[in-house]
Length: 237
Figure 1 (spheres, rainbow, N blue to C red):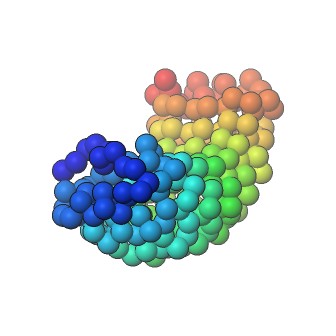
Figure 2 (tube, rainbow, N blue to C red; figure 1 turned 90 degrees about the horizontal axis):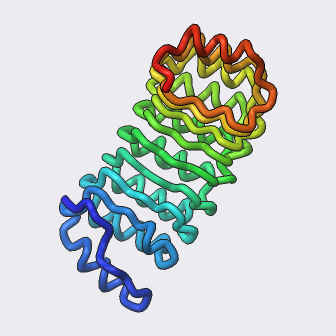
């Protein structure tokens, strides 16, 4: 099992290098391509998925701007045991990728969609239907997300332990009410720059396991929020 990134790649040798790398897909359960992001195109991801198949558990495509929905559909079809997928900064992807993950990747636990700005509420509805084992979801800067998407998400993924909503500026207190009602296992919540008022009070009353809460830039909070934190969240660090 390799825990490291693949050998150094040169763009003119990338196909040959990948063939050597993935001759035996069972050797590759964890792959991080961040160091090679400028070389990675959709066909590389497709080739990895075909070679590694059901062996692959963790894949990071952080910063791989050349990877889009088509490649990730092939990936989802081939790598149905994927548990940890990082798509941070993959700005080409749309809701279509989340539909593919929902359809084929029911074991997904950790998904990072940071700065995937084309993602909408439809993605969250899809994830809630097909990826019910999600524990960690990062939606930072996905600013099309609203309370309706959060409602759909938490009804299907009530086991969420970490939820990052930084820069989701369309969220409001009602979104937090849905989190209160369904996410009783939540340990980490990031609401940086969200427009929330007394929704924090609701969160505290439903999420007693909270250890980390970020409300940086939430300028509408009052003393009531701090009081609620003190009364309801004894594990807060």
